[in-house]
Image 1 (spheres, one colour):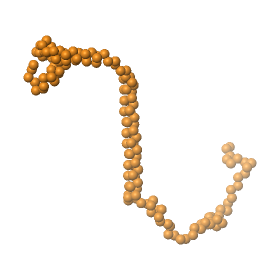
Image 2 (tube, rainbow, N blue to C red):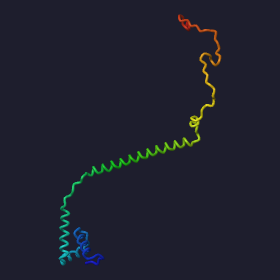
Image 3 (tube, rainbow, N blue to C red):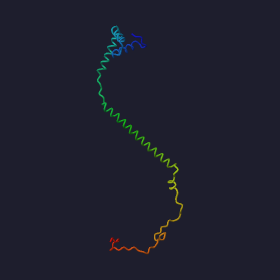
Image 4 (cartoon, helix red, strand yellow):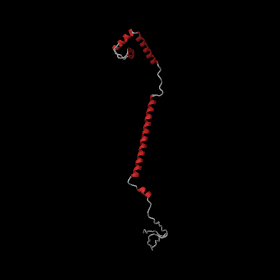
Length: 158
């Protein structure tokens, strides 16, 4: 056999396995055939590997729980759900940032007129006087009166 750093049995097993799978070079194929012709232990190992290969090939193929279409639909639905959650999070976070900035700028900004209006009270202690019977200013008295006759037209169109 070849000079390999592995023990003979491990190297032989790998060589036989590759021989069964058709993955050996022509030189290795000749080496395996010589071993099979001359070594009863290798013949026994070869038969065991052949039986194992047949048993594996005869195993029933399990039916999948889901069809490929169902799996792909589930994957894309999950991706869409995560995208929507991320958008909601970003929109909510953005609204929170805008509200916080607006509040802070309103409190710390230079325009405090609304705050001052809430705190200041008018300093004028005078009473508000409303004249009901007497006007505050004198109105001119007009002596002429306006009389409109109801039996004559306002304009004469003749």
